[in-house]
Image (cartoon, rainbow, N blue to C red; front, side):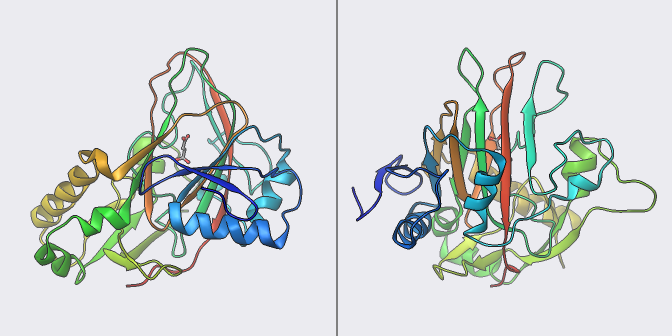
Length: 280
Ligand code: SIN
C-alpha cells in the first residue's frame, strides 16, 4: 500500500504497520504529516526503520503531535535518567533488576491526561535477538466481548495508580510525602479521534473497579487481563533493529516489552505526547 508520500506495509491485517519513505530527522512536510496522522489512526502502531535521530529531532517529531509529556518517574531520585525531562531512557543491562514495561500495560494511565502516544527510539538491540515488543489492539479487545459484557463494562469506572508499577514493581518511592498520580477513568472510553470504543483497563496501572466488592473487582479485572494476554489475534509484534522508532497510539493499544535477552543490553529513549482526559 502506498499513500501519496509514504509507503505503508501492514504487520497484521488490523494492527501495526511499517512506514517507508520518511526521514524523521528532517522537518515533515504538511502532506507527510497528514499521511502519518492518517496511518497512525488506521494502524495504531507505526514502525519507522533506519532513522538517524538526535534527541532534538526525536522531540521535534513528537511535538508535531502535541505537547511533550514529562514522566512521573522523573520525580524519583532513585530512577537513573538522562537529564532531559522530556526523554525517558529505556535501558536494560545485565545489572537490571527489571525492564521497563515487562507486562501488559498502557503508558502512564495513572495521569489525569495519559499520553496520547509514545515514540520509542531503540538504538541498541541484544546481539542474539530478543527484546521484541508486543502490542495489543484495545478496539478489538472490546469488540470481541459479548454484547452483555460490553454493556456492563460501559457502566463502570476504574482506578489507575502510579504506585502500583513504580513502587510495587520498580521500587522507586518518591521523597517525603510525595505520591505518584492516581486517577479514575471509564472502563470503556471513546477514542477522541476515531470515535471507536476502547477497553481501557490495564494490568500495569488499574488497581480496582469502583463500586464493586473487592473480590468482584479482582475477578472482573483478571478476566479482562486474561482476555488481553491470551488472545494472540489482538496482537502484533515489533522486532527492533538498531535505529528503529515505533510510535504507538496509547489510547487504543497496550504493549509488553519482552525481557528474554538477559544478560544482554538493549537501549532506547522514549518521548511521549500528552493526551486528553479519557472519556466515554
Ligand atoms: C515501554 O515504553 O513500556 C517500554 C517498551 C519497550 O521497551 O519496548
